[in-house]
Amino acid sequence: MSILNQIAIIFGISLLGEIAAYILPFTFPSQIIALIILFVLLMTGVLKIEHIKEKSDFLLKNMAFFFIPAGVGILDEVKEIWPVFWKLIFIMVSGNFVAFFFSALFCTLAMKLTGRRESR
Image (cartoon, rainbow, N blue to C red):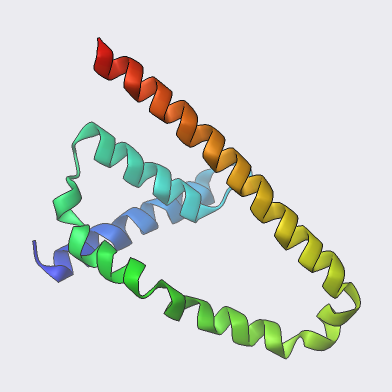
């Protein structure tokens, strides 16, 4: 599938996520909605991994590039961040441990469920 079609699929799913977030009566990140939509489309077979593989591989390989503007923005606000610097470090480190714990928990659960399904 051509790169333009792959980009159109990814942007279309992102647009659906934005529309859904706008319609919802409560605040919910549109990126998460778009990921859920992408997951559902892939799991139902409506969208095949080959339809977006080349473009998604490119985006994953160049992901660090997308964090540069955020890093520069933080450097511009160092004076405001400095008084709470250690609190932020604590939150980031503990947040990583919590995310690691729950990721490991859900991966273990998924592997157990998949193992049960394959043994039938």
